[in-house]
Image 1 (tube, helix red, strand yellow):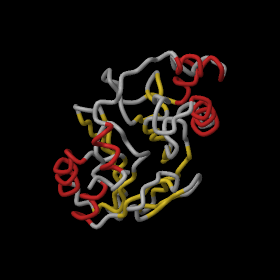
Image 2 (cartoon, rainbow, N blue to C red):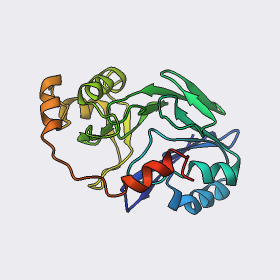
Image 3 (cartoon, helix red, strand yellow):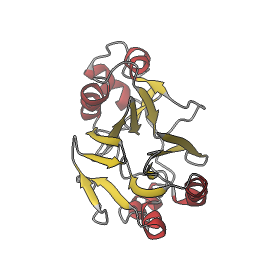
Image 4 (cartoon, rainbow, N blue to C red):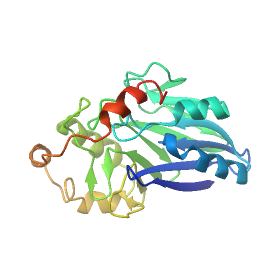
Length: 227
C-alpha cells in the first residue's frame, strides 16, 4: 500500500492518501481545498488515479477540496448519509466499505463531534477525523455535538479495535503524527484510564472553547462539497 500524510498549517489539518500499488487507485481522506496542487503533484509522481475523496465529517475549520477534486480528477465524493450534504456521489452508513484495488476502507460511524462523523479503518489503521485526537477529542458544543454520544462512539467503534491499531487523527496542534488505540485507551487526557461517561461529559462542558474562526465560511462551503 502507498501511504502519505499531508499537513495543512493554517487549520492544522491532516489529509491522508492511500493507494493500491497494483491498480494505482487512490483515495484522499479529508482533503483541504488550498492544498490541491500538493495532492495533484504526488498523484502524478506516483502515477496514481484518484478514485475517491472521503470526508470524515462536515468541517468547520477549513473548506473541503471534494468538489474541486471531483472536477479535476473525476473522483467520487463520499460522505455519511447523515451529513446533510446533498452534493455527494456516495452516501455511506456504519460498516459500509469502499475498495481501491486490494485495499478495503471500512466506515465506522462515530458521531458526537458532529452528527455525521465517520472514522475509516484500513489494514491496522484508523482515520478518526475529529472524533478521537492524540490525547484529546473533538469538541461537542456545536454542529449537533453531544458528549455522551461521542463517548459511546469512541468506546464502541475505536477503542474496540486492537491495541496496536494506529490512530491517524484529523488534526494535531502539537506536532504529533499518530498514536495507537492502546495508547489512547490508557492515557488520553479526556477519555483514558477507564474514565466514566459522566466524567467525560463534565470535562467537555467545562472546556469553554472560543467560537471557531472559520465556521461561518467553512460550513456553508462544505455543505456544497467545497463550492
